[in-house]
Length: 177
Image 1 (cartoon, rainbow, N blue to C red):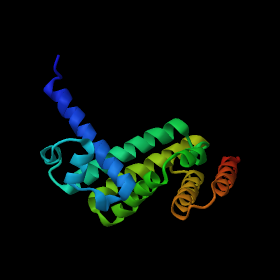
Image 2 (cartoon, helix red, strand yellow):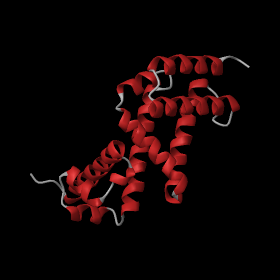
Image 3 (cartoon, rainbow, N blue to C red):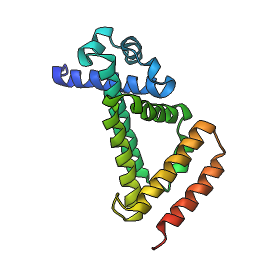
């Protein structure tokens, strides 16, 4: 039995997006080309241009795919397990995510995707505290977690430092007012 054309198209598009995310997280946005994505996905070059009109379209959709995947993971594991998740996750993967986030500051087409990431992370943080996302304690904890996360990934500081500071931040933010 052969696959329906629509299922095949969805499979190919997903394979291309997964390949693009892999390239982005391994080598940054400079490595993202139609040719490299097609090669990684083991599909013809024409497939990338069929599904993504330009490199910018491919980058935006891959960033969206990455953000959705990461937010799903963060929702499942929560903030309490963030240090363990970072220890288990490839550093290049984390660098790729943050590189795209910072790059969005220069690319208006990516800013809405970066905002989706921020808002999603803030929502997870607020849920952890049983507060609305606009609450100052939720925003402060979110900013603290992001700074610790970024510092750990970029500077490769000891994981135990991250664990200690993250636990302290969670404890302080969880105290009743």
